[in-house]
Length: 258
Length: 220
Image (cartoon, each protein chain N blue to C red):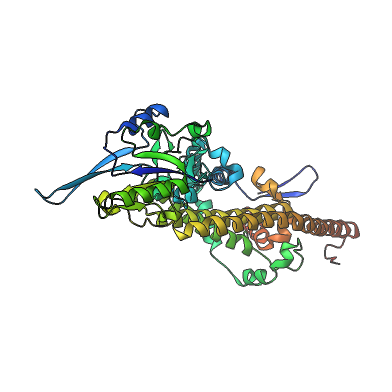
């Protein structure tokens, strides 16, 4: 069953406790973090509005990173986008292709939130959810999370008329459901992230299997044909030798009976 | 240069040592590129790419592969020029050779039109190798140095064209190995010598040329 995070940006106070809990819990290197708080200010003084983006993996159902990953190090599981760093070749295609610019290279390999696969697998919760003091984060079955998000939006409509859910449909449905006080663009989140390039589908599902098939067939065909053709060639060579011998023994160099 | 082997069969020097060195560099770098590249795109071999070491090997082999034309020019300028010029020069016999190519594929040379040092198929093979190598080098350099400047779509196209060029080169390799096996030509790249009988069947114009040059050389 698909899992999902709920991230209520009307409750998030930007304390960065989740950033630290994630870093510590997942024992991330000093220069690496899965969650980043990015401040946004808009308007001109004195009419300024501000906010921050709790930037982290959106766990897209149709994940571009998974589509472009050549080794299968990035994969979907329980509605979340997992990363097996041991299988990562460090090609960086995911870094290059993610519509949310989430994965980064760390120590030569891709690095991103994997939904605390180890913790959740052992019956626990993701570190960020456990730690959030404002109860802005929850984790659970996606349908229940989505229902809760809708409740929350309904409850805050008076205060935030533009309040909305983000992630129900984007990129095939996200594994991170956001409750936003305003349009996503105000937090620099694309309203409709681009799909994986169509050519990736063509590449992985047509070009690669067809190429592999053609190469294997060609090699097998060449193997069989090679045995036949070599036999023919050896027969020709023997004929030439015999003709040469016959020519030598009869003493007539012009003898040609081929 | 013609010598006799232990069986008394005449052998002709077809590839000088330096040409064989160039071939060895190209062949070994190509095979490393094939395996390390395949590891990136083919699931069953992906474990080889894990950790990223294969990407470094891929780059080292890529440098060796790209150095091949320069290496050829440095080691054997005349040979390189000869192969290049010869590869793009077709005569009537070459056209006729293509018409009867199926016979050659089946190992029958008896009624094939006479051929020079390179037969028409080898010429076409060389041109194809040059074209696809150029494409793979250009896309490879883009993926190596300019990747971060590409949009996801541009990246996917570049990688796909890179892959397809390798598919083409691999199919050309299958053909190359096929003809090497059928026409017992392994020795040409091991020792440099090939059987004169074989050459008279497959490259009779070249043998004539050699004998003509040899006769001229000895008379002058």
